[in-house]
Length: 297
Image (tube, rainbow, N blue to C red; front, side, top):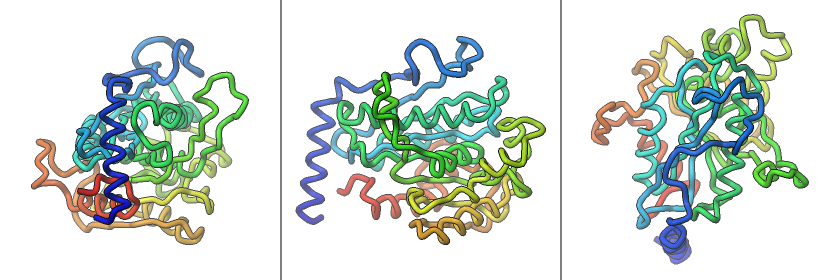
């Protein structure tokens, strides 16, 4: 390790130790009181973040907001806390997002508002929680991958004069991780995800807006994508289309296509056995190290 990386690692270890008492340890809501666009006040109407912290000795200061999949109709547990636990082992804090769902009567832009708010929330409190506000990623699988890709192409700098201090922060992630993602709302989409997100009869304009392969721009954050050819639920063409768009815009990316593996494979081990993790996990760690997101021993 060179001297600079060593000093950076020491800084985040000391910072994490000093600020640990101030950081949240349990699930907390994205809004205090009224939730914009809410249809009620039950659990399904209140979006939340649940933090998962790495040990102080390995914390890098980087953080990932994690969007589980589930077709915009549910939230897959193995694509949330398990991912956070995996990331924590490499020094990255994970915040699992419980976003509102089509099965509860919500439609776009509510889900996008939830992930936007999540990133703003983490960025606003980053220094207070011992995190780096310039190393905030977003990660999602399947429909959660669509939500993650949506904030990768539809973000803003925040409102400097907003009354709510959280709304002043940028919603732009510093990088993205997309796992067998739904990307398009067009011919190659996952129909259930589209129906839950946009309704049964979305307009052509809405379909285009949320077909994220059509919305990539030059300031889209660097992105890691992986998919399997065998995936029969979400076509591999979704990842290929997004990677192609990133390439055309000159955005850095890593694309890994594996031949075998069903949709929803997650880490590859539901018993959380690192020896059985799918190779994408090793490829991701290599990429995150290159982008200075992981703890460097």
